[in-house]
Image (cartoon, rainbow, N blue to C red; front, side):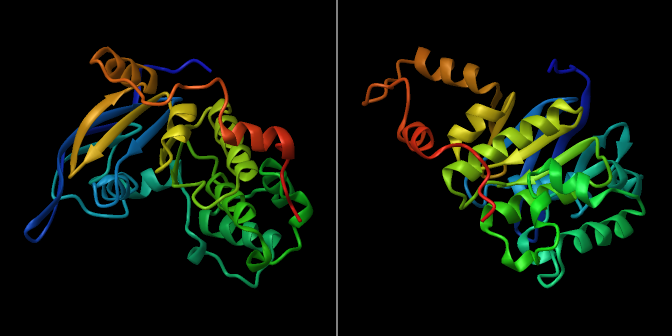
Length: 256
């Protein structure tokens, strides 16, 4: 899919202070319409705070953020209508089945969505009557992504979507994220898996101690490091152990 150079998110000089701690220190970046953008950094770097401010879930100290032409200070309710934010596991009623949860989210968004169609999108159509608490880790992650799509958002935020998943579930989610983008959404992800960011993201911003240290495509960032004289101690092979594992065990969804 071609990526527009139109910025759907613009962040300028964003600052967030907590008493004496400055968690975000004048960060500026754009996210282009139709791209998969990665916000990367160690725990405590400020990436989650930055995303929560963009999502209108947290107040900024200073700076400017525009989301699809809307100012986060002036139009937070309008912004909420065009974004999808992945919830963590604690955000779901564990005793409800997936059909019931989809209908519940439709009520929250004041919209209609076919539960069967939403579950089919993430490979969970055969789990429609299953309680959320009985899903595996990968199934819960796929369901959480389905709930972000109920209001047909222009922008989807995924916070560490594959943490703790087995290789099949992880690669399945990669395919799902690409599919979401192929249907016209812009996707912003955080992840601690650099191979995941390299495979999925068109561009990444690397954040450390509240500041952006680098912002470019994964390929360009790697090329810059190599051109500086960096060499890996171990020769890079054409495949890795995860490729071996998947070749032997398959890529299909596991819904048992």
